[in-house]
Length: 354
Image 1 (tube, rainbow, N blue to C red):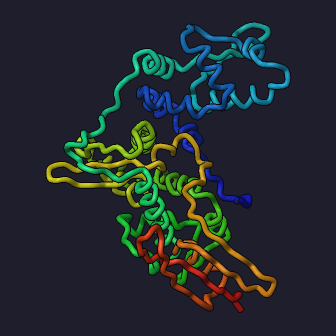
Image 2 (cartoon, one colour):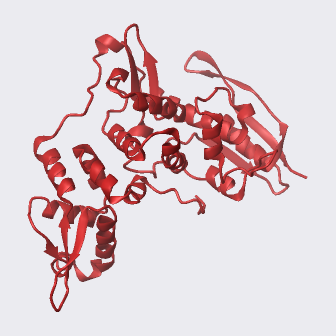
């Protein structure tokens, strides 16, 4: 995977950039505290867990003694991360030496203790099967998430090729396109736009989520509430149904947008409506490196500049169209496991642009 200049920061980079007062508001939720703990480097987790049930501060010199000499770099990275997230509060003792010391953020410490000792219950529990009936399988849910994400990307780069409409307003789509498309009557992908298309799926997703959060105040939504809700989603179970009536109006509106991105699937029964988190939602705060949602395909490039693409992804074909032009398109029908099914497989002979 090529190196790109677009920095796809993870959730914790955005959390660390919040003002101190808003960070303390986030840390009032025990589940958020656990999500933050999960994201920390291993050595930082060690420091937090060892200091979790101790009162008072600990000197920087004593902390350094907890690691081997060859771990000094990891030690500095861990301390910097803890200070950025205001998990550690730093102070300098008066006196000649003016030695630094650290202590855990009291709000974070109290709520993480609560989460570890008593567990805690999410604001909502999964709905019983008697109310929802048959829910999508994990395989169906993963396929849905990928289709939704690819449809969104098609809207982003070429709305005329997208098969479904999106609930995002034109102004919000322009926010997403900012920096990816040139600002002209005939928008074209910029260098950053091409780099964006070459990123892994989860890194692309985080770039969009980051823009979505950054512009939340313009929509009258507090970014702290939005980050808190997204982190809270990571504790829900993939494939389980959760009642929409347990959400606020802002959260329901957010879920409608997240459904467009493939993070959740919305369904409606006779009396109730519910949402089903996909793996994209439950993994968002943990890891952005999982590329398992990529559709498989093959591209062959010949020395005469002809390119052959074999893929079931319309998005992949549209991306390739940005670099070249179509010469041939073939449609295949396959006979699989005794059942005749038609698959729109693309075998494309592409000539270079002149």
